Length: 315
Image (cartoon, rainbow, N blue to C red; front, top):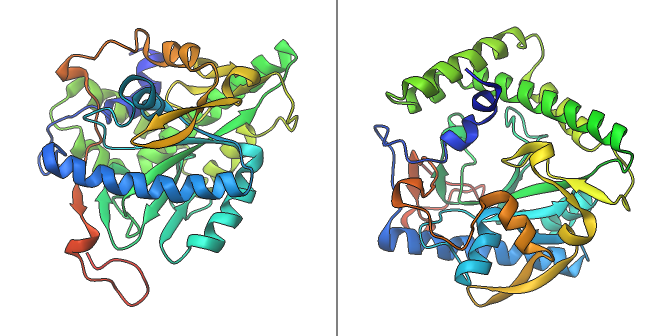
């Protein structure tokens, strides 16, 4: 078992595993869901633009803007990057405007355990593997922090290695916390089960400290560099981790506008280099069996639910 496999379990859960009891978003159901994602993104980006907070579409959303002028046809999520140094301002402004409409989940949420934040629509349900014990599991858009890193190559390497170490330990602690759910979702994938059991074992050794405390320590590591004018930035919570998502600020934080389903939203200025780094020959469509989607345990649309008295959902 290699280190790459131990780090790549999140990607495994982005592939359709055909596990029992999961939902596949296709056809009209997917189009219906995508309309809600656009509405959530509109609210997020409106706050960013009004508060002068640096943001851009990232991951599959940036790829969709460049290649399709909107959603990748089979995509069931949206991803937005925000500068980590701007995140507290974003959180305060967003909740001031939209706390009645959305939950904003960050690493500070009890038993959340991941460093990708989520804006989740109240009075809806989109339950994934991370939501085994989460009642606030509405439709969501991911928000990923862009972190400063050091211009000195030695300090940058040390920062990167520490981020990799802490991210791995948090992942193990997370899998131990949700061990029953993730093992059940692995189905009959023996290779994935073997990797998960290894991470769960390591997570058990780390259970002397709570999941919340590990998340706090890891985020503190990610945001260690305070230089908001550093030449380099990274996305250590991204799917390719610190070294795989290390960029020059001038090509990644600076942006250009691109069409996304009729909206002109930001993407990285050097989007070609970014997308090649993430996807290789990104203009070529992947084979059907390589097209990613979330493993969905449950989905309910707002119009199919009755609102509860506290603004949440009745499941």
